[in-house]
Image (tube, rainbow over all chains, first blue to last red):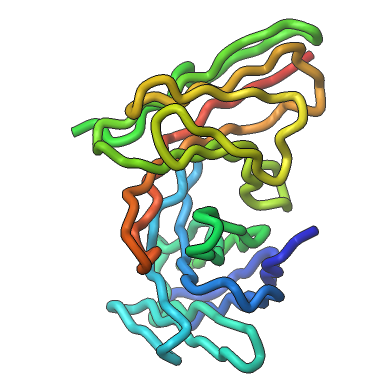
Length: 112
Length: 116
């Protein structure tokens, strides 16, 4: 079963707008939450990550918001650019298992 | 610095044929992973390895076998290919970080496999 649920499946946003992608997890053993960006024909690449002891992390135009009590986290892309058009995956990791669970992915299209 | 290299990049097989996908990393990483990516399903873990000579099952291991005889290589085998195994396969590697878990996975660019 999908232990990490991601929404929406796809997203269209105008240049300069804000893209928001949400993920929810079930297992409280997860202790590291990365986001990956994937362009067509390429493998995913780490974009930004957070641990559950902080509620927000910002790197440039990308921000993760984390709500431990709700078991939810989200990616915000500010001032979206056409070059941000890609598929984004959230993931959750447990030190106990040494492996990642991925969300289903969100295809983001930024229109000029 | 090549990072993670997957070979081949593309392959078409007939049902029942066998093949091996090769993943090689030059970063001296302890952890290696094989995923399959299908539309609407994200990345699903097939098998993984936490070090040379070790392997473990992931979410969807049936129909696949793996071997990690050398630290830098992780092989994924399909013994008798089935159409349901048509997918894009990604290999990833990661350094081990005691108690932190914040080392990123480095992915290859994938192998696109079609089984007719």
